[in-house]
Each structure stands twice: as structure tokens, then as C-alpha cells.
Image (cartoon, rainbow, N blue to C red; front, side):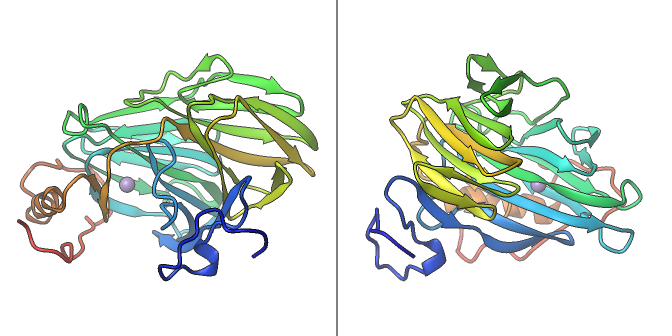
Length: 311
Ligand code: MN
């Protein structure tokens, strides 16, 4: 911990969850597991619930996939969000209640829109053995689509452009004048920066807030080092970000218009009220058809309900 605190907050703050620099707000992720994989959860943090509409960022792996240690997340439900999957290494099979069955490889994008309700599985057993490394992100849907029909997209051909010392792949939204074909329901963007040693300037929108997460190595931005495992929040008001890499590194860039709504997030649901979550979870536990059926060899995942009563 060094330097002044940008957002003084003594409400039970822990050292790892406390911003510690005023140019860049750097927070450490926290350890979690998904299937058999260790993940580093970078968003949400107590001090940073969303970046644009991005409400969840898991950096998974790198981890070795074997017949014994597989990702293998059985069918589970979602509402009110889009899942965005991007891999650096390995393959994962996506299956969902819409009947989609899609293998995703590095450099490709899977985007599932949950709306009123969808369920899916993510599998590696019997599909892939070797290193797995990637990110799983959620985007909160806005009020006008969050109760809508579910959908799934797979994109293999994303816009890319060169910067001083690297290449930008535009996963979602518009960066540098290039627009991803992926659906977006709010004004947000995401990119992978594949950087070589040296400084690179990436154009951004001054009206949007942004964050950077190194997926390998580290970078320096505005004099602040951001290591793999950390999220560097850049705030708003800049039309470019200069990223200095000491060597080859891959960095996730996320951003967008600050998300106005207060979210209620519990388990795999993104909602606005606790009652919506209770209702969704009752539908999942009762298997009443809202979330459909996933044709997967894996067992359906269920958990006890949320720790609050329905109103
Ligand atoms: Mn999921």
C-alpha cells in the first residue's frame, strides 16, 4: 500500500480491496473456483461493482485440463446478463438450453444473452486436455432487454488493428473506429491488447470509464504498475491510454458508459430486486421450464436459495 487513498472508506475495508493510487485505482482480485479451475475474480469488488455495464470479470487459469481436472461446469441458470467468453489457451465446449453446442478456441468470442432466462454448461472433459487460460465476463443487460428472449452468438472474425507495439482485438463495441459484430445492449466495449515491449497508445472514449487487467505479465500506465491478478481502473475523461509493456503481455481492456442502475447480483442472476432473484431461483429449483433444458452429460447445478425472503 502506498500513496494517498482516492476514495476514503473505512467501512471494514481490507488492504487487498482498497484502491491505492489516484491516477489509477488498482485492486487485487480474489480467489474463487469454477469447476476444477482456480479463478481470480477481478469484478465485482466492494469498491468497484461495475465498469460500464461489465459486472463480473473472472480470469481463469492458466490451469492444466486433464480427465481428472476438468472445467466441467454443469447446467446452471442465468437472467439479466450476457456471458462473454474469451480464451488465450485451450478449448471449451458451450452447450445451452437454446440447443447451441459450440466449441470455443483462442481468438474466438462466445456471447450468450440470458434475458428472462437461459441455462448452459461449460465442458472440457472428453473435449480437451492441456492448458486452459481465459476470461469469463458478464455484462448487465439494461431494463429494455433484460426480460427479453435469450440468444447465443459465436464470432470467429473480430476486428483487429495495430497500435505502436501490438495488436488490438475488438471483442465488443467500438474501439479505434472498429466495431465488433457482437451484440451489445448498452454502450460498452471490450478488447484484448496483445502487446510487445514498449509503449502503445490505445484510443478510448472520454465519456466512458475503463479498466485494464493484465492476463499475462504486467504493464505500466500513468506511472502505476498493474500486475497480472490486478485490475487497474482508469476512470473517465481520457481520449487515449498509453500502456507501457516491459515485454510481451496480453491485457484485457473493458469500458463503457457508467451503468446507472443499482444491480442485485446473487449466484448466477443479475437483477434489480431481491424478489426477482427469489422468483428466478424458485423456477430453477422447481425446473418449471423457464430455463429450458441443456443436453449435457453433466449434472444440473443447484444451490440453496438466497438468504433473504421473497417480498
Ligand atoms: Mn454461466
